[in-house]
Length: 289
Image (cartoon, rainbow, N blue to C red; front, side, top):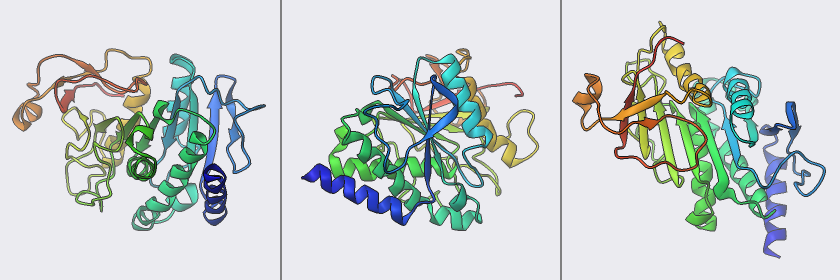
């Protein structure tokens, strides 16, 4: 009875906020996705593999299912990693508005994503094997969605990992609803544009592990904040095949800023659901992309 009520509730939400779309890619359909609608079932005739881990990609402001954030990461996961289900969250319509309007739509998209997680758990899929990857505003969508889901079903029912790719800072720096380190079993944040009046990202260490790429701002080869912001997803995509992308723990802000972080290296990005770390702050140095 409870399961039927949950499914009916999810269907109702889809009818209310149909702007959010979900597309599934796997090695069996790397180019032509399956759309996950309210009628989608994983029990037969679909590409979704219940035995594989699932990565969910959530774009940011002005993004869509077709922007490089999605296409680059999806291609690299399917090509270089073990088999995964990759679900692309497309909230293009809401994301196309002004930043302030798109930011205000974040809770609605988060609710849609939460309901997607509900649909999978009611289909006996282990949501703890899900890894949410959000870029910009998408990072906060990931955190809010799994937070609501975990509060309703218990923390053990939440996703295994969230990766926040330069989470949006404007309007979110002191926002209590922003991505938190308690929003998943493991929360990784990659900072690439966290300082300056016009910075896109949050400079604060808000994850279990925080990678500050080249100090967290002013990326090599970039002349604009947007370029530095985009480096977050480019580096995450590169981590699918480049295992030399490692950071070193920093014991202080001074060490971080002076590039004097030393100790046990930790790989940035990748698809592992959990990582062991000796610090919450790491610095990683890269060249031009």
